[in-house]
Amino acid sequence: MALSSGIGPATGAPGREDARRDLREDQSSRLRRLARNAALRSSRVGLFVYALTLGGLLGLASADYATSGGYPFGGTAIGSWTAWPRAGSLDSDPYARAVNARRGDIPLAVGEGMLLTAASDDDGRILDAACTYRLAGVTPPARAWTITVTGRGASAAGQEPVRTSFTSTEILRETDGRFAILLSPEVQAGNWLPMPRPSGPVRLALRLYDTPVAASVGSLDRDSLPAIERTGCGS
Image (cartoon, rainbow, N blue to C red; front, side):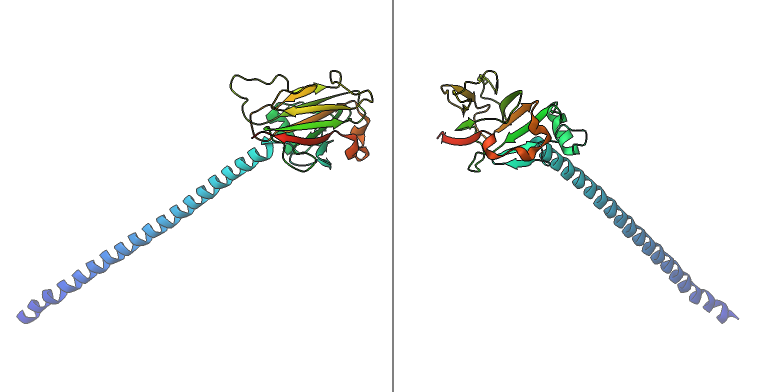
């Protein structure tokens, strides 16, 4: 009996230690699994936030690019000019409406007239503020028209443009009704239209008011619009 009572405690203690060790290992394993699951969930949330942020930034950048220049869609090319017959219509595309809102423009409705723009000359070269161009010829029939030059970027410090546009009532014409406008950074004789900025791309806008071509862009051809010829560039 004495031998039996002496062996009992000796064999029971290691069993309890093993049980405690197994319990600690089980708890440690569960903690590691919880940590891994938490890290996995955190990485998924981080990836989602990153993708959402990247998508938002790309969307804003693309919207800014699409609306910072001219109308991106809906134009009809006619030589170096592009006609925009639907820019002011009720069913104009969202980008056209965004461009108008960003510029603060009130576009011409279909019954009021039509807008044409040009960003390159007749040889396909981008209009450059450092160069001189000759716009010559006629315009489509219209009660009145204006031609304007614009460009992104600031004007030269302390040097505002003398003018940025001509109207059909003030333009100097030849006896046959044709005209020539000199778009140049340097002073020119005759119909001189100064460049709006020292350098960089510029754009021309021809607005026809109360014109029959507003109802049919197909009636326009290259000879019915002013030619755009580059005559020289500064150094």
